[in-house]
Length: 415
Image (cartoon, rainbow, N blue to C red; front, side):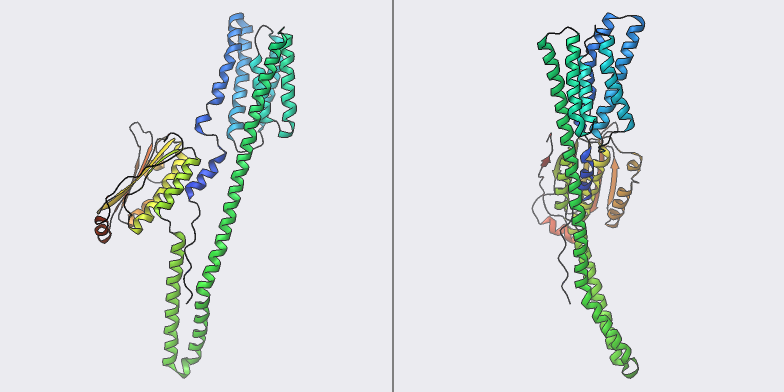
């Protein structure tokens, strides 16, 4: 019989795939930047409030509010979406920004509008097709210089305004190009993963062919022989049928062993994937593996639980920190996955999420329990806890092993 193939190197887990899919999103730590940028609009707003009364003040402030709203839309959508093409709403907001940048200094020369020129240049750097961005930035710089001179500013002030507009718009263009490169890198990584999966399927197909091909051929030959002997030599035919049964059973065992080898992943491997996935999602990770090895079935079960827990953290929690702790003794083992995110949703609160339901079924088969709930008072954060009893024989072996110790492993900012 052909020897069973060695287990295949496992692919990256679901958690890392989730992190890769999130790659195009802007990290939480930078989502507030467009709002902070709007503070610059307080300068012209102060001028308007101090110099106007009645209808002119209301109209000017309304125009300024429309400008700020349009810029906020462009900044948030173009900096967070993976889509390279602006939507119709984004183009409309860009037109509003451009028109107000041109008209407001003409209608209100008593107000300092330099910030509008900067906002307009930044918007064009984000929205225009890359082949036209240089023209848009150049036009913004020229417009800023002309408007500055029209207000009677000296050459140095005009030059400073033009350089400010140019510098900030080029910075935004650089950020946009880097985002494009990151998106292409993630696409390439996805293609590599897809090709690796295809190659793995082909390898599994070859392994299974080598594994059962000979056995199936032998079964066919012996079945034909048994059919010919059925009338002439019944005892010999019975022996051949018994051989067929033996070969079929052995083949079934080998196929099961091979498939089990493909599927199984250790807790250490899943913790390593979790560290990489959380770091890619900019979530600070604190990993505390068990001090002593866990029994094989519990080790694989906890590996599955880590994968499911980290996937939920990355996809749903909006967390900045995640702690994974594994503890065990001679009687039981426990896994905790805790984050500081938004807290459990309705399905998670009831334990009815698809992933959690599947995990609960696996844990129940090992006579364990799965509990979920908020990590802290007030509903913030999410805690996934898995408890599994240690079989008696494995518990006796663990009792003679080294004492449990915590080993911290941190990844990401803030650890």
